[in-house]
Amino acid sequence: MLITIASGKGGTGKTTIAVNLALIIKEMLPVMLLDCDVEEPNAHLFLQPSFTQHRGVFTTVPKVDETKCDGCGRCSSFCAYGAIAIVEKQPIIFPELCHSCGGCSLVCPTEAITEIPRKIGSVETGAGKGIQITKGSLAIGSPLAPVVVNAVRDTAPANHRGRVVIIDASPGTSCSVVAAVQNTDFCLLVTEPTPFGLHDLALAVELATKLQLPYGVVINRSGLGDSGVYDYCSEARIPILMEIPFDTRYASCYAKGGLLVEAFPDLKEQFHNLWDRIRDRLASDKPPYAWG
Amino acid sequence: MQELLIISGKGGTGKTSITAGFAALARNIVIADCDVDAANLHMLLRPVTYHTEGFIGSQKAEIDPHKCTNCRTCEEHCRFDAIKILNAHSVVIAMACEGCGVCRLVCPEGAVTLEDHMSGHLFLSDTRYGPLVHARLGIAEENSGKLVAKVRENARLIAETQDSDYIIIDGPPGTGCPVISSSSGVDLALIVTEPTVAGLHDLKRVHRLIDHFAVPAMVCINKWDLDKEYAEEIETYCRHHKIELAGRIPFDRGVVSALAKGLPAVDYEIAGAPQLAGAGHAIQHVWQAVLHRLSSLSA
Image 1 (cartoon, chains in turn cyan, blue):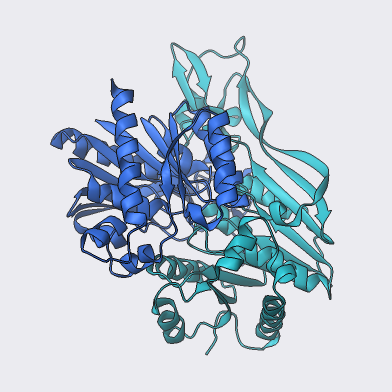
Image 2: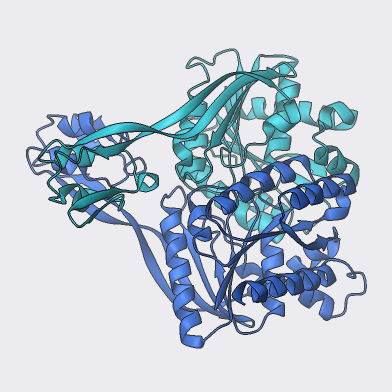
């Protein structure tokens, strides 16, 4: 089973939910956690894994053989991303803009273009607290987060029967979130009860609906804001699967990289209930994303 | 005219609340919301939009089923797995297509065309603090960096016409494509962090990014009193890396109350809420530190 933890707004507690839920499920089933927030991966700070494997994530970028290039400029006019410019009949490559489509080498009439690998990030795998974890990191200055997200997801076994794979996504609703969320079984949307939280939850709900994924909501820091998120969920018949009250003790535990389910027995029970509710939602024969 | 970027790496550290505070305190500014993926600034600035335009982020391939002979050459060459066989016909999966045009190039029947794809909207608005340029990227769309560039281009045009002193940019979280697009060529980046293990970790990554683009940086620690030990660790990191500390902002429930009323924390405080002695006041201090740095950078 693949469960994604997502949120429109950043900083609502995705990683907190991901690592603590993983620790609870681990008591019953093998768990793997994929940290797909490759721009700012944080799950390892809480699980403290020892990474045993490390590999680079690469894309391909063009390389021009200047002895063959006659400066015709067809590569530059073909490139939809502006990754090749011709200055004084010499091609200049901007590798960070390249999408690796391979079009430039296809249009080149003199076969002057080959493709070479370019490192855009890395993937590390290991285990911490009895949980297998994969961490993806986008190289600083590289824009291609979705490619690294896909590389992280590729480290999970294709057949995940009998195990639970938890995916920690990045905030937002754009292409890198889609890469993390698509083709999973359930989406937990983490929010906070503030107007910003509500606004961005609505975007996350739109995303889950567009991808036809069943979903439920977790409200973090409840008691801190207003009733907007509750009214929205009740009107749209979206189930609230858990609430974590705002408590400076929880905030301080999180700040130090602590684990809520280890420090607070009452929260441990709450996370157990959350897992039960997710399984109930998935076991029900209702069509996906219809809760009524 | 100078451009100030407010950025954080980690989400939810308070970028937007602080940006809105600056907007309320500053004079003669243009405001740009570059968090095009989950824009929130408008909720505090309550803009009146006078111009909306569609954003063509890319093109998408389309296959004419009458010309297609199902030779599957396009599918072979597509690196994005965007062409699939559906009911015995090659079709483009729009969400996967990146508009590169290779399929059109290789199609022997001329059955492929590339069509403009509208992936979001750009808005020009007025607020009580000055003009606001903001945008909304569609759900599950790409090319957020390009939309950010468009927001900044429009903000610069307005700033030049009105002879504004500053453009204040609310940046997106992370370090990826929209963040890179938000950072290029700004005069100063204020990194908003929080005193947590994740806040410090993400501060380091985003600072490396800012440094990579040779942009001067300052740091401000929001909710600093939630964990004074980590706040101290962040300050040590800043000293080691010679990053100027712009200030500390205390955790203050009033920021959320102000947000619920659609007001920046500084305005809420001015409106006279005695319980709010904290954040709004601190944001004023941070703004003064930022102004001071901006003026020394322009000297």
